Picture 1 (cartoon, rainbow, N blue to C red):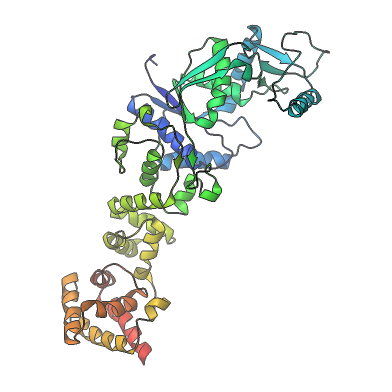
Picture 2: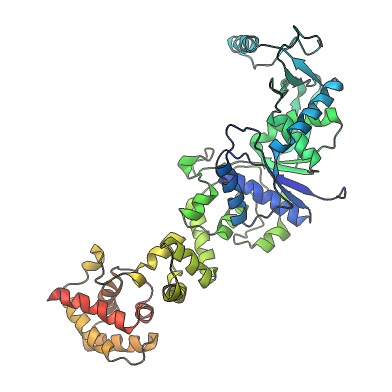
Length: 467
């Protein structure tokens, strides 16, 4: 790997689904790597064995694949490198950059309570920082980084700008727990270095961690990555995004809300990054245009209605056969003639739908069994006068030999003219009879899709209601 190769990574913890903020982080890292012709790595940070689950790992991988965010090589698992993490901790001890701390939990608690009573920030003060002798043979200890106490640390962040922290504010954090297992703070730094990560792009809730992690990097004499801490996503009310705002997993946007992956990716891209006034951005354009200079410093607000409007655009642009398969799955699976019918109907069905659920609901009339269950609003249109009109329409459509949009329209229009009515006055009860609803695709498209026999049968059912 050349020194100039850009390497980014997405490093989720497998303790739950791939949430919307994590998906955006993955997208930004993926786009930055692809824009620069570099590499994008996926590392599963599963060192918390008690909380990490196979189901969560599967959900993360599934969500990444659904969003078409491919990673280079196999995914890494942080737990596989515990030996290497411990090795670096020992190197830090050997360099005098870390120390064995034998403080008890009671001593730590006493220091915390004293800080609280004096209303000052808690800063660990360990007597073992400069003492190499153990209190007793075999006494338990943790390994802590010996953080610098003088001067300041500076990060030239690609999103936040120049950020400075006084070293006195940084604590001697734990590198190895008393059982010898590495902490997140150590593992992430070692893994990023060993994997050649050049740019760390993540949420700004990790900005404080960056200063602490730099202590390890500088103590080891390793090259420092470029940091880019992206503002978090907020809800419409300005508060940090949570479940009450609809902060669902990526799989829920797919399975429950019926969002297409290209729509979600486009929406996430525009949450915190922009390219002029462009709203509809293809994957190819995103790769060509994306860079960190376009990431804003302010939190973005998640708006489900905007996502659905964008999703509607992508539904209308989507391939009809693909949509038919997606909708068929929502109906428990369709095959053969039924699937072909759904695909033929798709140009009309998708014109109004904002998600796959609406698309599936709009297709219900195609597969409804006779006699139809008529919604109350549609039933209100089927009074005696309307049924008389349906009788006229039934007779006219029964004579149609050219069962096309134009052929059926000519027959229905003739009935309307003979009755002295506008076409809409005939189309409304006809729609209610054919679909059981007050809304549907164009009524002549409905007739063509249902076919002559089914259409006449549904009209006759409503005419018989009068009898």
